[in-house]
Length: 133
Image 1 (cartoon, rainbow, N blue to C red):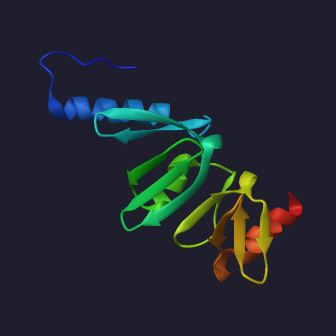
Image 2 (cartoon, rainbow, N blue to C red):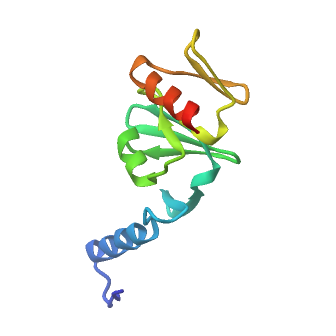
């Protein structure tokens, strides 16, 4: 742990805050922090329902709220590092704990009434996981 001394240098402060956020988002934890404006918001990994990629942004939907995060889907998945999430399409990541069914004909995973398309690339990985769980 280090301290910030006066006078406060903007670059030093930014570096210390980013180090602090990195410490808080340790992959062994059950949560991570998301920066929203001037706030750090704690998001519990078990509350994540799905993620939707849209360009340079990801919409993260939890059981209680949604968050717009400026990040690529790949980068955010590495940050979250959760074994309960699986990418099923270039645009979609779902919580495996919430999958109610998977239809082989329509190639859609159902999360309690929310159907998500599963691309060819991810079909075998998803079906293997569902069969083995």
